[in-house]
Image (cartoon, rainbow, N blue to C red; front, side):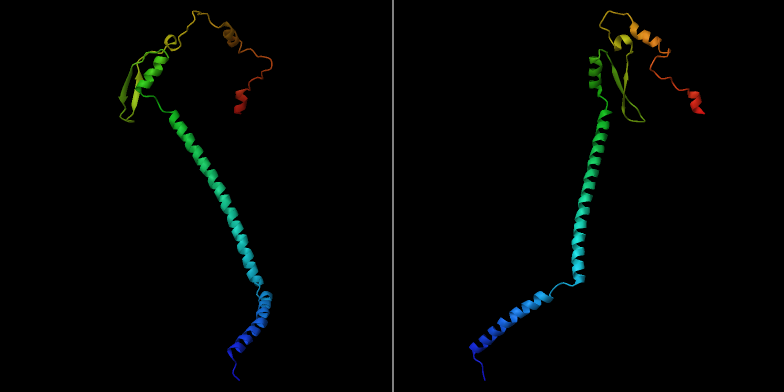
Length: 167
C-alpha cells in the first residue's frame, strides 16, 4: 500500500505531536550539567570575582604609588627651585633694596665651571642694619635678663650632669 502525500504529512504531524513533548521532557530531565561541570562553572565564577578584586586592589596600590611619586617629584622641584641663586642684576637689586652698594665680579672656576660672585664690600652693623632712631642706649632689660642666666630660677629644672651620663 502506497501512502499519498497527505498520509505522509499526517503521519509526520502525528509523530511530531507525540515525539516533541517526549523529547522535551527527556531534555529537561536529563540534560543537566554533571556535578563536575557545576564545580567547574562555580570555580570559574569565583576566579573571575577574585581577579576583579585583585585588579581593583592593584589599581589602588598603583594610584597610591603614583601619588607618592608625584609628591616626591614636587618636593624635589621645590628643593631645586629653592636653592637657585640670583643672576647678577637680581642680586644687585636685592642688595640695593637693603641699602648696601655692591660691585659684583663674576669669575669662572676651572673645577666647577660655574660663576662665583665675589662681593667687594665690608659688612658692618652700620651698613647692614641701619638704625633709624637716634637712641644709642642699650636694652637694659635684655642685659639684666642675660646677666641672671646663671642664677637658678623657680620652675625651671636643673640641667643634667653630663659627666655622669658618659659613664
